[in-house]
Length: 195
Image (cartoon, rainbow, N blue to C red; front, side, top):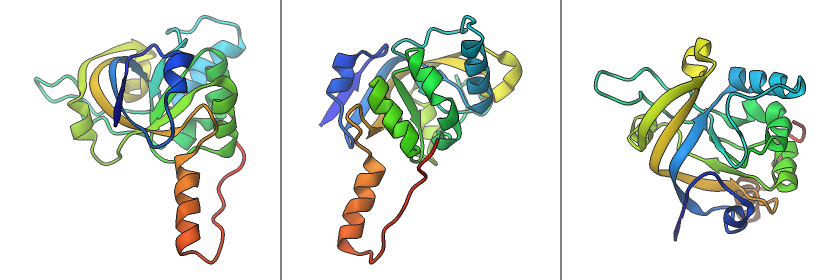
């Protein structure tokens, strides 16, 4: 079953999501990677005003390529998410409810998602050109000087993701490893434990 959601997200929407759920997002989401997250957190720590209101929002970890003539955006595949882990708590405190990327999160972030009732979605890596077709509008809204890492507002339609971490502490990567270990591995696989 595919679930459909529209940001901004609230607890009621998130309570219905579990790891492994296939989700289609329609509406506005934002882009941000390392450099933008650093600026967000510096602004938060100084008590300043963020360039976007994070309450209930979704951030997609992506640095899209420049669009070809006649296109809205270039290739827009997900960035490895663990790179943003050290910035997560201030962002969640500011109201962020979901992130999209690729790969697992550190255990510290899994715990933070549970604490602040937020989710982590994974998008399929390696298909950035296909994903970009789900983006109907794109405009820079902050930190234009960062080039492809500038914060953009994207209008998406049926943007495909999978719930990797839910508000209950579920972790699709841990679950997958556990199932695989039960079947074949004579040793335990460990994961990064700190943010």
